[in-house]
Image (cartoon, rainbow, N blue to C red; front, top):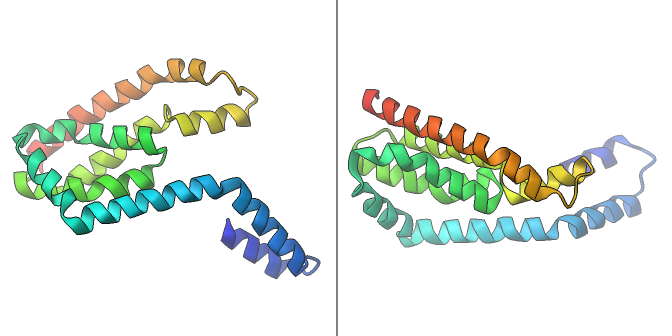
Length: 172
């Protein structure tokens, strides 16, 4: 968004600096909570990574053994449901998937992909995504209906991805 504001300013000769900063201020006022949440998630991810917490959790999850690829997408599903973002989910949990994969001799790339795929199935039931979608189409206040209508699809896709990932882990 910031890039869009800057490019718009540069290509629109009628736009004044005052308008530029006015729009930037409005954008920041509208998005400050989302920006703060992203910053907090990144801080937590860095603390977990640099403190060795992610590796420790990976070692603990490795105790699950060769069936871990079956549950790897579920971690991504939970992460996106909680954060509302596949990117934030991967920031938090991709290093965990890599650490676990290295210990159980399963492709870390496969587990990170499973984390991402599982996260994508949660995007349709993420409270943040539902609220945005409901507001965009004039269904504010009906978020519960949307969640109930979409949760089985999300769980069905997650189950398929879990099984597919497990099969792939046996082949790769």
